[in-house]
Image 1 (tube, rainbow, N blue to C red):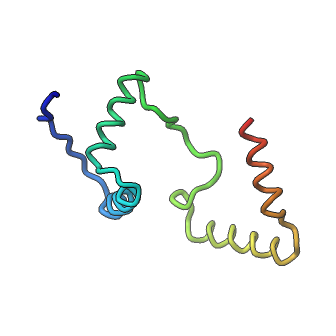
Image 2: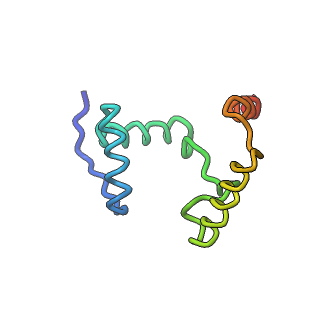
Length: 99
């Protein structure tokens, strides 16, 4: 068995590190195993093993406080007026979109 002798160092936001490590801890995967697995997937696929694209829908990171407030107000008004859809219909639409 080969000895592991290389280190990887990365600078990331502390809250991102804490949140990711909390998830990994829940599923029982050490960070070093995840990094090793990612590197192996990069080698096997010849690239990053997931798409690196801009989101098609707005994300919280890309919104101003005013934009978020407007979106939440609109959603609330739609819910109050019964303009939404059932959870079953929403998931059916998601599943159909995956085919």
